[in-house]
Image (cartoon, rainbow, N blue to C red; front, top):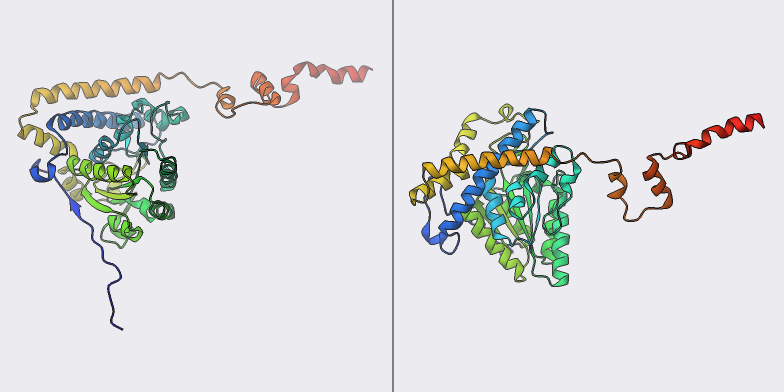
Length: 374
């Protein structure tokens, strides 16, 4: 019997705005208007300032370990802008701050989280985002389940979930992808391939030429984009989101970007990354290329940049003030935010802040003496 090809696949690469700020007008058609780009650039600069301030807070021992988002803003903002605020849901890991803020999460909530205040995970009503997820890959299963619920309820919502290249080596990733594809749920998987899983380069943690091709195993639409190109990320995200919203099932986007800072403030990337590699990616900084585009179009100048830098600095100051100005939690929060309804025993524990009977009723201390004299 002659052999035949059982399956063939390919992964396309999309770039619309290159690192020199040159735009492919044909590919950019019907994507971002100049007003959008200008607004998103300003937002990107403010997010960078807030991110840099978090780093300084950690170094000043005013914040715990913090993972910087520096260099990955376009991947978060381009996809976040494509999603419908108040309708779609974002399920993040921990380098999508800009997208979470865009969808209504107060900036200081992220600071509170990394300061060790769990109230930073108490998402305000009406903000369609889940809390930050530090365990690698576990949240993708949550996103898939949420999207399945949207489909069962016939709600025109889409779930976006973010993760790094290292997470695609986790079993949870494959379970989520398989379930999402099998049940054709409206979920968009966005991999921020920043080249490093902490200190392990992508080439050493997987043998595939791209991360995007992993989606082919699940018969899922997939594309690789320049993750530092706001236009490309927006277009790929918009197309995937609207296809999912229309019943077309899940999709996978690999945003090729770079982690310009250390993995976290507890890391020293100089021990495993070449300075030349970092310098090369510095030149591809999404902020730099977007500014070049705006200046080239006559939409930006030094005066506007100076004013924006001052605004960004003030924004960061306000975020710190808000985070550090939150009143300290009370011991009663243990009861108020754990139980929907409390038993009589728990009510007594809350009132006395004691679990043993002597603590709850100190007058019992004299009973033993009375028995001795009886």
